[in-house]
Image (cartoon, rainbow, N blue to C red):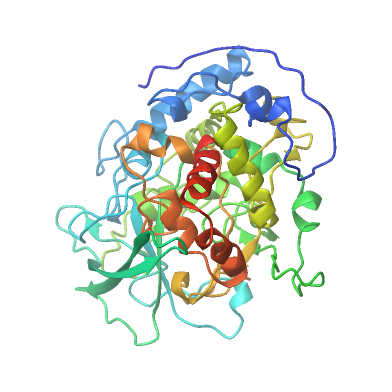
Length: 452
């Protein structure tokens, strides 16, 4: 089990309404409020929130064991229930050290990259329609004696570009081909590649007040600034109703309980009280065993609590002049129109995330990111061009924690700058402005984003 560092600290938080400004508020050095973890090292994403009680620390530690556990096939004494088809055997296999997965270079090892699949339906707001014989997620692995759903091949197309000052850069676009050995792939099957994200600060994201997210919607771009964010409304099987989507690349999950139970179900093949039926039900791989659910409700709750109670690391370069110049560029260009700087969380059932001043740099809304980033697959209210604005906190620690700098929904960007230059659609104007910056200005911008 990972070493847990328990560091309690007190910081003064200024109570105020959510706002966007370029000022270096003292509280922004602690982006997770009182949950913030103060040390910066390769294990910075694996630390519990700094304001947990002793009982909460104990539950966090229990959930930590589950997050690190390798599941195996039944029957077994510990962690049974793997498969019969799956993507990986544990949570950490996709989220190494609780961080981002790198973009795989071939289909032989997809690392933390998975593929959601569906076929069109009359009303896409009801959610993706599973593919007959393949379900809603492609599983390229299977237990002994069972055939996987197939394999994925990956190729890359690289294009050359130039900044206004003459500096060259390249963008690398992955191309994916799914081949199935167990089902016929329909011609209208839609594929959405999605890389595993870091899991820090999720409890704080869940604690952001719904009205603070919805108030940022501008679906018809009434202010004519080119930004028309909208919220996703998704079906939550934990509550059996449609709710505001917050988690996932398309804001396609409403709660962390749903997110965790869904990952167990689809990624590992583990059933629970939220998803009691095998993902392979109705397919040739279905085992027909009466052993569901395979993980008891308390284990799922503890695992969910672990993701809710992970700390956000302290900001770096907080008073660095270059980073502060980069922050000014970030706001002047208008990056903050989608990457909302600041919130005050609501009062929830968990005191440690309640009423915290936080700086996640996200509006949690869906935005059209242009044809080059499109997956062309709807997901509830998200269309094929739209993605949720991801939080930026911790982005600059990806290389330290995970040894790579893969970004965007499928990891195609090899640096923060490349990720920016992939932006299109509603962010086209911001990308063009970045392309006109001088080398020093680009470096300052990247230093600021890396400090988050």
